[in-house]
Image (cartoon, rainbow, N blue to C red; front, side, top):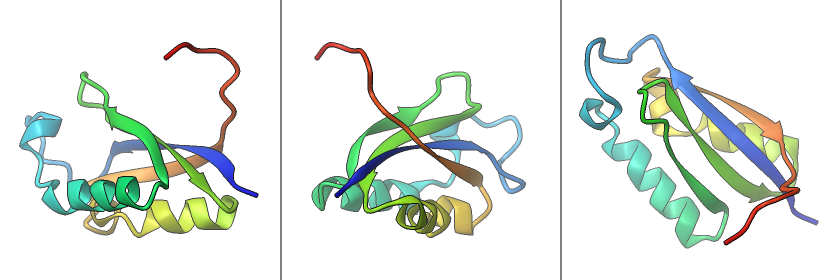
Length: 95
């Protein structure tokens, strides 16, 4: 059974100071996100507009898979961002 996790991204040590999230070298991260969408793992996500990081919500087998997914993100491997997965449950919303 799948579990839902929110993965919180924050600026990492290689974040380019003074540059917005849209000016960071995140092409490989974006390709990784597109692949997660294509395989129906990524439910939704995006950057915080204050350039403090971002958030994605994923459906995975469990905590180990959420951690692996976060740690294998090219932006994390390149230290542009750090990522923390948290188990998450949607309780309210409309779309």
